[in-house]
Amino acid sequence: MATRKPMVAGNWKMNGSKELVQQLSDAINNVKSDQIDVVVFPPYPLLPMLTATGVTTGAQTVSENEPGAFTGEVDAQLIKDLGCQYTLVGHSERRSIYGESNDTVAAKFARAQQVGLTPILCVGESEEQREQGQTELVVAAQIDAVIDKLGLAALKDSVIAYEPVWAIGTGKTASPEQAQHVHKFIRDKIAANSSDLAQGLTILYGGSVNEKNSELLFAQPDIDGGLIGGASLKAELFTAICESAKGTV
Image (cartoon, rainbow, N blue to C red; front, side, top):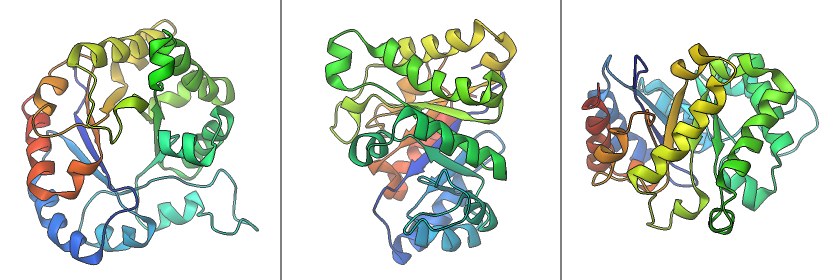
């Protein structure tokens, strides 16, 4: 993992409550250390509550637009003003359910960086695309959309999360070797133009990560932590995953 600090990011999706904030915030703060970064992505209304407890937070998505007549959208600057440091962009559910294209995701990435948020760019292939041998083509196109819009240097102030769509919420998980293969592909792709940027880039794995498989996943040389879904909603599971990340330092 070179000098990259591991990160464990919990994506609550459309789950959570005031009670859950109270249950998890202490556990999250207790597991934090200088060794790892821990970030939580709750639904929008819970962001101020978590931020107030000292938990590092991010939004699950942001608008690509500046403030204006966009009913139902949330501006990146407002997210920043709430004390957030990160935002997800291009999560597979945003791409598949809400039709976000590579270009839209790149625009969200740009807006996030414009206001000082760190975007976590989510990339990954469907099961059909994987069976057709298109994994690398799909992932490369998703990354290239950002590079084409903003230049390679924009990736320096970002995180990439590889999340095979077929492994999200399905209970299926890429084997450590499968995940490592794609992570290495991503790092090698960036290294072809800048080895320093590639070596410093944090790349997370997301896809049914749990307390049982996290240790083996995080031990892979190009996997720098995880984007955690369901397991981030249970304190004992999430903290166990964080401990796995600490074990790689």
